[in-house]
Image 1 (cartoon, rainbow, N blue to C red):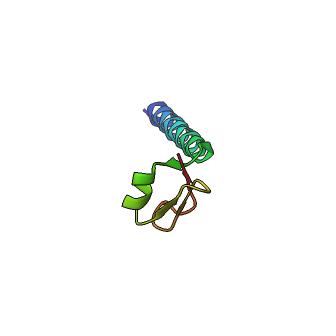
Image 2 (image 1 turned 30 degrees about the horizontal axis):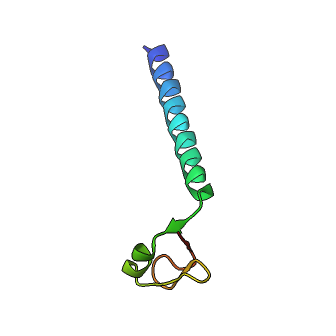
Image 3 (image 1 turned 180 degrees about the horizontal axis):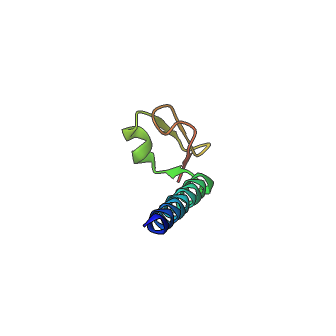
Amino acid sequence: MRIRRILAAVFATAAFAGLGLTGAATATAAQDAPSYVTPHQCTQGGGTADLTHNVCNGGTHNGQKVD
């Protein structure tokens, strides 16, 4: 009975550790991706698309590149 509890604890710890590593890898991959928005998304977010410099000024997409 005691061995079952120990094995259950080991498996649970391994499962939680695996989920944590998967989440960290996903978050890192999302940060490495280039951040582009369309001019429409920029203006919907309250910003102004500066097509001369291809950047969104202001709003929720401030500083992101406009594609």
